[in-house]
Structures are given as C-alpha cells and as structure tokens.
Amino acid sequence: MSSTKSAIVIGAGIVGLATARALAIRGFKVKIFERSQRAVGASIRNFGMVWPIGQPTGELYETALRSRSIWKEACTEAGIWHNENGSLHLAYHDDEWAVLEEFVAENQAGRPAVSLLLKKQVRDKSSVAVLKGLKGALWSSDELIVDPREAIAKLPEYFTEKYGIEFHFGVAATEVHSGQVRTGDGKKHRTDRIFICSGQDFETLYPQAFTDSGITRCKLQMMRTPAQPARLGASLCAGLTLTHYKAFEKLPSLPALRSRFEKEMPEYLKWGIHVLVSQNHAGEVTLGDTHEYGLHLDPFDRAELNDLVLKYLETFCRLPKPQVAETWHGIYAKLPAGKSWLVVEPEPGVTILNGMGGAGMTLSFGLAEQVVRGANLD
Ligand SMILES: Cc1cc2nc3c(=O)[nH]c(=O)nc-3n(C[C@H](O)[C@H](O)[C@H](O)COP(=O)(O)OP(=O)(O)OC[C@H]3O[C@@H](n4cnc5c(N)ncnc54)[C@H](O)[C@@H]3O)c2cc1C
Image (cartoon, rainbow, N blue to C red):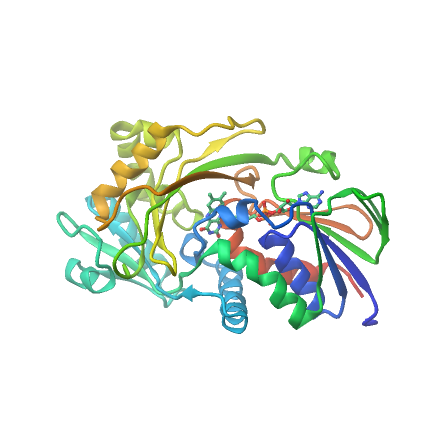
C-alpha cells in the first residue's frame, strides 16, 4: 500500500478516534471532521468503563481485551489517568449467586481473570461494598476505568503527535460521496477512503443505511457525586446488572432471576435500570443508569428514575459522600438484539461504523482495527 493514501473520518467520539488511529497505523494520512468544538456526545458522557466482563467469551471478549490493551498504551503514553481496578458483581440472593457460579463454571477456561470471592475477600477489594447479607461476588481483574471527559479531550493531541492525524473541530460533514466529503463551510475534500462515525446522528449522512439497519437510540440518565475522601477499590455492580450484559444472557439460571425482578422490581425493568459505580481520578463517583429506547426521546430527565438508581445503590454500596453533585443524560446508537455493531458500505470507499450500544468504550479500539484490516484498503 502506498503511504500517500488519505482517509477522512467523520466524528471525533471514541469510534472516530479509534478508526482514525487504526487507519494511521496502516499508513493513511488521516483527517477527522467533528462538528462540535470538542466531542460532546456519548463518549464523554459515559462511565469510562472498559468492561470486558460484559462481553461473551469469544470474539467480543477478545475484541474488548484488544481495546483494553490499546487504552493502556494510549493512556500511558498520553498521560491520561486510568485505573486497572477490576470489577465486582455483588450477590445478595441465592438466584444471583447461582448466575455467578454458572458464569464462572462455564467461562473460567477462557477467562482466567474471573473468580468467585467470599464475603471476607470482598472486603479487600472494596471499601464501600455492603457486606451485610452478601453471599459472595464475581471478581474480574480485566476492567479498567478512564475519566471519559479527560480521555476524549486529550486523545486528539496525542494522536496528532504520534500519528500525524489532523483534527478539524467545529466542522460538520454535510454531504459524502465516494472519494469526496463536503463540509458545512462549503469546501470539498477529496480523499481515498471515508469512515462515518457519527454516533446518534442517523439523519445527516446516508439516512437510509441507518433506517435499513433497524438502529435506534437509547437515552441513559447519569449522576456524579462529589469527591469521596478515599479510593473505593473495584468498580461495583449487583444483581440487576446480570440482566443487562450479553455475557450472562445465555446462562440457564438467568430466567429465574429475571422473573424475580419482574415480580419484585417491575419499575426497574421497565426503565432498564441497573446500577454501576465508577470512581474517577478526582475521587468523584459516576453513577447510573436508566435505558429508554426510541428514535424520538424525551429531552427532559426524570428525577424519580435517579431516585430509583440511588435506592438500589444503597442495597450494595455505601458511599461516604452519596450526595448528587451533577446529573446529565447521554444517548447512544442501539442496534436490534443480536447485533453488536454496524459496519456497512453505502457507496464504494465509504464505511459507516456505529452501533456498539453501551459498549463503545470497551470495543471501539479493537473493532476499528478489525474493520480497517478487513476493509480492502490496499
Ligand atoms: C450514559 C452512557 C454511559 C455509557 N457507559 C459506557 C461505559 O462505561 N463503557 C462502555 O464501553 N460504553 C459505554 N457507553 C457507550 C459508549 O459511550 C458509546 O458506545 C460510544 O461513546 C459511542 O461512540 P461514538 O463515537 O459512536 O459516538 P459519539 O461519542 O456520540 O460521537 C459521535 C461524534 O460524531 C460527531 N458527528 C456526528 N455527525 C457529524 C457530522 N455530520 N459531521 C461532523 N461530526 C459529526 C458528533 O458531534 C459526535 O461528537 C455509555 C454510553 C452512555 C450514553
């Protein structure tokens, strides 16, 4: 391949950043157009959890591990804070413990990072996990946290220095055809390859390709506490999370757990609530979340859903400073069940990469390498 080939990436969220990196490594001269002055989409609104434990063993888990190793390298070289603090899924009911036992029995061969912990071992991993009534926990050492606000802000400068990627912020791509991008300032940009990583914007470029994929939006309400006085240890979650991630969905004991939640906590299932706890470098804790699906989402947040999140949080985590200092919501692109990402070529030389749902921080770096490798770029 000639090193003079060029590529344009549209969108500077994590998917666009990961794609630009993968192209630059293949020798492309890469430009990114981002319509905002800085990326302010899903990629800065999330927990910053690189979360392989949520991915089923096999291709998705391996993609998550590849992403994790790229995150580590990028954070170390760019001076971005990251914490390899692992994760705990806490179980307070027999049906939750049964799911964890099954998960470990079925997966341990392919996932040396996971094991079951007893109550007293949990104390060593977390200073805030509720121990009363705890049956045990699933420990995984794979998980890593970044602060997305810091990471997404710093990666562009690092990628410019390391790979020569050119960033154009405040410039929207308004029209794309094979080999050409038109931007909002009226300029036309010729290039060899185009990658569209537009997050939840399905309407501007190739809307029909998005409609054909069945993609929709998902809105998540989030909160952040003030800085806690100490490091908390592992990232935490509990039983509800087991109903949320693909890694657990085929386990034979899951339907019984889900049906108890349907009886005892219907409003949690209705609003797709499960609770994750992630602490950043400043000691603040990011909490969430809820899941509302649809192409046309309510722009306003519901206080009662945040209350449900905080109520469930109390069952498994006692923060020294549980006050809520900030609230916001984020929206990600969500594909129909069974699909983990969207990769389509609406015209020769134009690729749409999108649809990683709630796992974009976990999968993007690894997936972008795979897509660019397979995209017949030579
Ligand atoms: C609240 C929340 C919590 C989450 N937590 C996690 C987590 O902890 N771990 C995890 O793995 N995943 C998590 N996710 C999922 C993850 O954040 C997303 O999968 C990921 O950020 C999607 O990245 P993206 O680049 O596709 O989208 P975005 O970050 O939304 O970026 C798309 C960018 O494209 C730009 N753009 C769009 N159209 C154009 C155009 N025409 N011209 C120029 N620019 C354009 C937009 O301005 C935007 O900056 C979470 C998501 C949310 C919302």
